[in-house]
Image 1: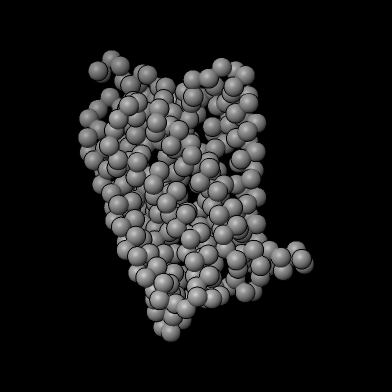
Image 2: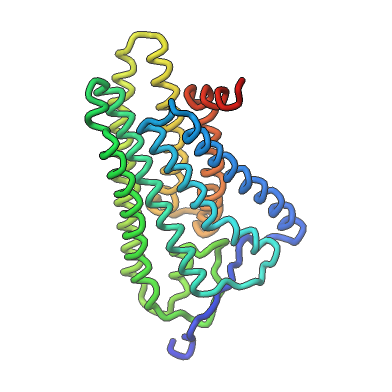
Length: 306
């Protein structure tokens, strides 16, 4: 094994095994999706900053979710587009490690922000009279800072365990970006601790938080059903259903990738799930909030003067 180890300076991302014509087609398609992701989340940020009626805790959290979604897409999609144009173009070791760190940071941060947003909706609907006291601006800032800090710290733990590993001469990563498990497969050393930490991290930021979100929404829907039919119930359903759609898309794909059972061809399945996770999820989130949230639609009409 010692003869097969080398000082790695770069990696080659294999991406998807496709012919040149299909790669060019996907490059054009994914480029449009990427632009839509940035524009959609940028519109959400713009509406929240321009419309004073959206200066509430709920939309404060949504603005940070939009920032994370844009950063999440930016951490993986540009490199994927480069690979579609130049499949053999390598990525430096430092660039690969940086990409792994950023992807993990934004993924963990989004997990926690979605929990925070469900907690906000729980307090707003189940304890409306105490909402302004429980979810004060000080608490909002603390929750957002905690989400970002936890994302950075957990990613640093994985980075500290990854960087010292010796890598084999085979420098081809069977993925479209430097996903941590794909990078670990190139290590010429025992990676059981790394894999265990990835699993433990996935369980701690996916299974536990997702369970708390489900419990919160059980309480929320019970409270909504007790409301009288009218504008209040309709507004509660519109805001909660949009958030629940986003939660289902994000946690569903993430749990299948990192916690769910392995069957069929898990390597290829994981690639396509991560493609959906890093490209389509951030693009769909602003569409879901725009189409299903009455306050966001009304804010857009006011800003556009309709």
